[in-house]
Image (cartoon, rainbow, N blue to C red):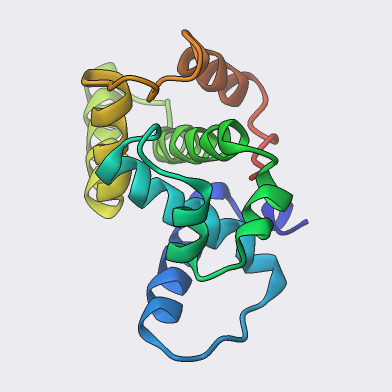
Length: 165
C-alpha cells in the first residue's frame, strides 16, 4: 500500500496538491490510489470550516469530486472518515516532532521541536482550524468520543509504522 512507501505527512501534502489540481482542472481521470487521500483532504477542509456535525458525506464527496458511495466505501461512515482525518492530523504532529533529533542540549531540542511544529502549522492551515474547532471550541456533535485524540496520539507514538488512511 502507498502509505507504507511514503510518510503520512508526504501523502497529505501530495493529496492536498492533487486536490487543488483536480479542483482547478477539468480533467476527471484520477488515479485510484489518490481517491482516499483526496476524500480525507476534502473532509479536513470541510470539518475545519463547518464542523464535523454540519458536514455530510455527500458534501465531502462533492468537494473531492468523487461519487458519494466511494467515501462510504473507503471510510465506512462519517466516524470512519473523522478517524482518518484525526489520524492524518496526529500523523502530521508525529512526523514534525520526529524530524527533530533528540540528541543535544534540551533547550535546542525544545526549540527545534517548536520550530518543526510551527512549520507544520504554517504548511497545514486546515489542520490548525480543525484542531481549533474540535479541541478548543467543539460544537455539538464535533467530538465523537472522549479521549479519542489522546488514544490516537498514543497509538502513533508507540506504533509509528501504523500510518494508514
